[in-house]
View: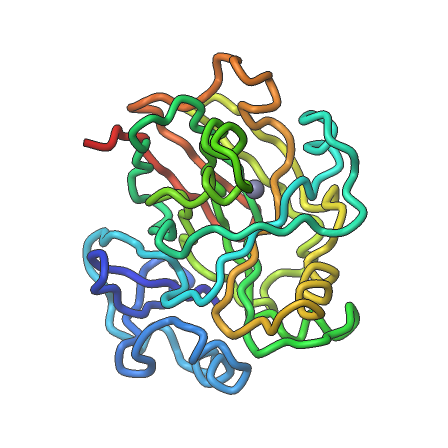
Length: 283
Ligand code: ZN
């Protein structure tokens, strides 16, 4: 089941993708796609619906972030062996955690706004975990039961802000529009092996990132288990699990591959869909 949110910013409605790729309106069944409806009971009720019986959404509406009211947006850093190598960093012993401000979260195809002072704007295709039920002190074996589904994330990053403005990485990860999430959340039952999904990112049609979730250092289940020993994970929280190689940073800090105004970024994960953002300058 593919759950999504469509409509203008701040007025998104809940929807479901049918087998033909059309959006169906779920407003009669749930108020929104948020943590409140991501428990297994509600998902089972939605799964039992015949999508063709739901109102067809005409046209090509904007998509919002596939989950609304995300409580925490957490990111795992340097979680791919091949990406850690390209950045010259050692393989981490424990998952590296940082937060992305919730105000960065946006729709999958919204413009990426290059903030004032940005000189090293970068991209990161990432697999997102959506939490379905509250998780605290969960073991790796149990972790999957707490995951509602998965989605595509682009961990948009400003490397100058991230590394040159002191403090931690959060400064370079939290600018407005730095958290495209979606196009939809695919429920866990539809993903056969989340640790074997191809991931790619293109800029202006040119391949930049090629990876697969099999080279993740810490698996989705290990990440959920680890974080749940540190804090309660709540339904609707999202964890972005790190990026494969090919980011602009990997080519050196003054490399030519940072994003410029007008660039078009396409972010793809097998089974989870594609995002497409255009970079625009802030005014
Ligand atoms: Zn990242």
